[in-house]
Image 1 (cartoon, rainbow, N blue to C red):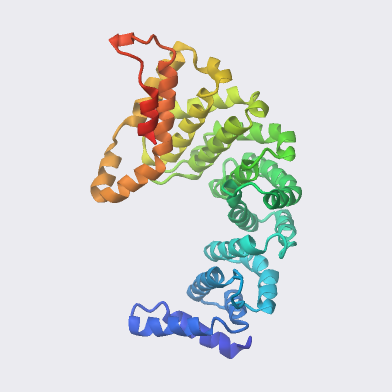
Image 2: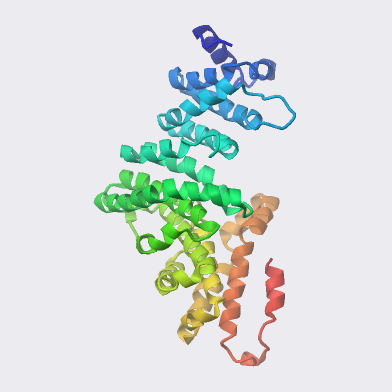
Length: 415
């Protein structure tokens, strides 16, 4: 297929037909696209449509079609023919980052996913300049572009959270850290400063806090396998700013929606995750920051409402406190009787309540409610049990005339 106006027009017509609700029109169009996707220049025609089409619907359709094409065909399977010719592969990698960053957010997300799929196969050996191209965009000052880079980096690096340790993985992470850690830290500091500068501008704050959420997610991914030397050396910068963000309460970022978490809740939730990671895996290095985080997260828990939008934040905050109270050398933080009473009255009991929103969700779709409960709240329930166990371990065994709880049984039922 040639990169011609005639072929672009043909492709546009068939993409339009794939959106038709009539199966008699839609299915033949889908079959046609499947039949031509093996031709050279087909993916480049899709990218050209993304760049040149004036019809936003067609651009979105082309971006989804391109992402699915990459998902199906990019991986080279041994002893099977290469589904994308080498010239197309080179051209795609040369153009996709720029196109992604210059596109509207809806299209940007599709192309970011496509870059992530390509990156899993080709980065870093077959795509060595990807990081350099992305990092250079931090200098643009345009947060639409910066957030596109951060979103793509998150898609690329989040696999570090579950990859098995290997020399190949260490080599890749070191390469990423050498290129990305310092620019990310500088961007983090600059974004915090901009938040102070634009503290009264709701529109600017929404963009900046979207960036901070992505930066915090990247911090988690880059620190998951081991504590990098760079982040250990710069721990004060990161932890002081994380602590400041945890205690921040800007009215402009609060939402009226009782079910969907806002940017402030999502950011604080991710920071709780980051603090829990350090408390669990790098407690010696994190020790001097931990009391401040315990106080901040504790205050967050006792002042947060029972609305559904706070569920993730409360779950991650409880998980952090549970991970801390398990450690013998942090025992003193939980020995005060007033603290133990507050844990029971203000954290454990309220978060075991079956709310009206829970009842409504169960009545609407009981199977979905049970699935979400099993997937999303198992950790939270176990964390609550761990906090309760910690509380009870400081009480006499026969208090109220009953034996101390069987913590092994609690642990089993909470899994």
